[in-house]
Length: 584
Ligand code: 9G3
Image (cartoon, rainbow, N blue to C red; front, side, top):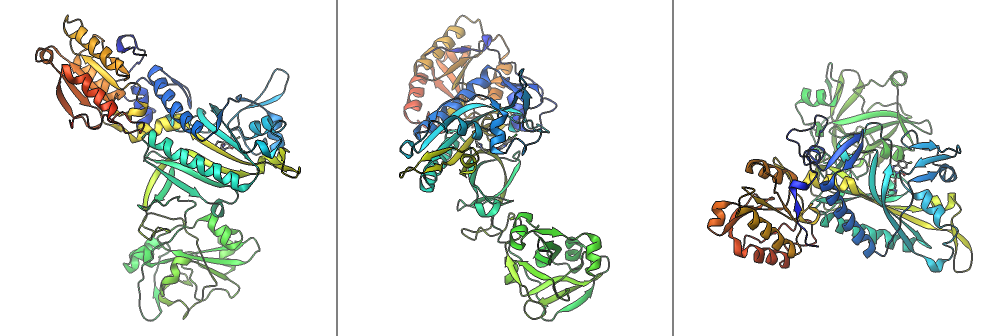
């Protein structure tokens, strides 16, 4: 197909102004570039140029899914409520699950995901271990009634997801598919041009399923993560915390009057020491009813999930309970605690010999409280929310902080759905056994937005070659000019014959408008055909990503582009930006 797209006939209503409700780059730019339009809160239409990008993102995902052996299929969005009753999830979800009743008064939901549907779909016909493993996937619209949709495509109420489901006879087989899908997701992120980190949320942290999220680094991302040059990355709510407390070492324990000092910030300021040299105390109750006092580095926050796991449920004491124990809020410490108190401390404090900590008397703190000399710790545990600057659990280097957009996720579901829905297969000795399952999702529309978040500048979008709505935009400067117009059309057709996708901006607009729109829409390469340039047999080529411009002989341009295509500048990888085009 060598047809050339013509801007004069294309429906791409670009905007000069930023839409008022667009808070992040991708929302702003996709709207301004005439690629999406909001039709309701959290619901978007894809206009022709947006659809071209969407189709390429889907195709890349499709190719990588097919390469794993997963088989594409398509499930309905309308799901019978009784399947969700079987799995027990009908009542687990609130108004986020979009429900309706049909004309026969049957309960239906618009699918937010398809575990129940796919399990019910196969359970009567996927019957023998000989048919396993099986992986099915679809690219399909999902519905989740977010209470506050925002950030454009990043958190919509109707969005496109590739969701895959796999069925296994044993854990080893599930692990293999989980690993294959994880590798495929890495390739998908690469090909989309996404700077991403795989973030393990291992079973220990969140209990139950093994899962890994693929985070596209972006300030607009909702997820907070830490990452290291060695490759380690973790969600801040799940990652191991190896804090690096500092020590304000004074030989003897001294009780210091600290009037009005109750917070860590006030304590650090009062003593003129860093917060990392102070110790924060939190008193609570375990589910077993014990008084538990936790101690963590003053510059860190308690991770409730970890505290629950370390202590067997941890609930902070209410003020009146604090008083009942005679514990002064804001100056608690390990010295002089009620004898029944269970003292649990963050493991990184084990290296701190002398603590700066409350004196269990309002208005007084200790410096130099000696671990093992003036007080004991009953247990050491990982209690804190990991934060930038903490030591990497893998290599010890300081962790960096980042925000991320969760673009895809792999899950090991075990037999959660197959057991609940009686989906079994006959194993080798004929015993009916629930399938082990995995599920794997890629946010298609979310990935598209993530690409824009990572590839834009003040002029607009900078599409990676792999997903650009077209590769080359030919811009004739003076439309209707009897030389320029035909030359531009011929050049466009020649380039299209190379197998590149070409658009020509044949609108009768001023040059400035054409350049601004070309930068905004973000075609990877622009070629300007002007009267003066033609007279010298030249056209001006511009790389959108770097802004580099170069006058190139008209006669060699197509040969040059053919070179770029052969030389891998037109690679599968997301960043194939005609690299090397100007190096020749
Ligand atoms: C719901 C609603 C929202 C939901 C879910 C169910 C998220 C729900 C988790 C998943 C897990 C995986 C297959 C593809 C990859 C992700 N939000 N999840 O189950 F009813 Cl309203 O969707 N599913």
